[in-house]
Amino acid sequence: MTSQAADGPETVAASRRSKITPEREREFFGAVLDQVRECGYDSVTMEGIAASTRCSKSTLYRQWRTKPQFVAAALRANRRVRFAGIDSGSLAEDLRLAARAAGAWSTKDTKLVQALGHAVTQDAELACALREALVEPEIAALEEILRRGVERGEVPADHPALAYIPAQMFGVLRARPVLEGKDADPEYLVCFVEAAVLPALGLT
Amino acid sequence: MTSQAADGPETVAASRRSKITPEREREFFGAVLDQVRECGYDSVTMEGIAASTRCSKSTLYRQWRTKPQFVAAALRANRRVRFAGIDSGSLAEDLRLAARAAGAWSTKDTKLVQALGHAVTQDAELACALREALVEPEIAALEEILRRGVERGEVPADHPALAYIPAQMFGVLRARPVLEGKDADPEYLVCFVEAAVLPALGLT
DNA sequence: GTGTACCGATACGATTGAGTATCGGTACAC
DNA sequence: GTGTACCGATACTCAATCGTATCGGTACAC
Image (tube, rainbow over all chains, first blue to last red; front, side):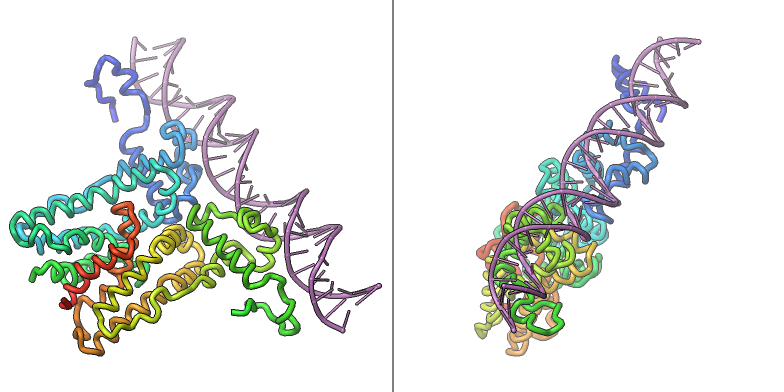
């Protein structure tokens, strides 16, 4: 809040460039993502965000030039690795843990992907931000889990099912709400891993 | 099949109730679905459809009361079972055939689902039409395939992987474009079935 | 105390699209 | 020939939203 007074020579400009604190920014970002999840990208309005965060439209347009840029910034700021730090020493257990973690985020993430699904085809920056925020980090983490399993010799490196695991996890996560009207909760995903993924890999 | 929709105070209506022939109607429906796939639901305008089919907005509003009703009608008219008639006598082969068929439709279907993904949460009729057109028929057909396999004794009725097969097929279909930027073509899906689905079921 | 720079409120311009209304033209029934 | 009912064109109403501009207020620098 009080200026980070240990900056460079241009401290004045740097510290007072914007009066919007990181907390305040997170508020904006949280509001816009909530709105997107709830109403869809097209239905979100800058006026609505301004009203719900009790700031003015001017502020939003001053900080971020346009609506897609604003949403993209919110996505990037929300970037997080859902299953970081999973490393139990066993591939099967890692996959179960990953399933559980993915299930825990499933409601919010799926809604976001769903809501942005189309907007993404119209704005390249938005598409990029979505990939960076919700797709690539998780896929990379999953591949890392698989890589370690291979390295430990739990499964052969050229096992044909390996390549499909990320798509399976991702797909089932997104598909269940459509098919069954229920979110893919942790239990569902763990059962899926045990019933389909592990057997396909030849694990227990 | 005949163009008679919901409207008839009986009468000679059968012959001249609407001058719109079934062919003409298919033109409208084709145009609107193409537009939806290409630009998304929100970006589709009744004016645009009218212009691209060289009819007048009045005609569209006379036949279908509102935009969502129009799109829903188009979806229902487009209803088709992608893998009807698959029955090779072997579960593994049936699943391969289903994968091939699903892959063949994947580009158009996935775009449609993607484009309507959000609109569907705002209009119940649209949601219903989408389910009826692109989700339920295929799931039902797939379950029928599985049922026959169970009946033939190829796989036990309570095999835990069975329940996840529809979600997997559907999910992988929708997930690949997001993860790899490529459509899930028939070869990809067949490989998936052979690498992951059949092994999980304990089929060669 | 004075200046600067950002904030919030609000008004504004411009565009766009849904849905309605009007009107002339025309195919078919009788 | 006359009537009916639908079609296409077009003008219109109404509402929403993007993005800009204006203006007063205020926190901080000096």
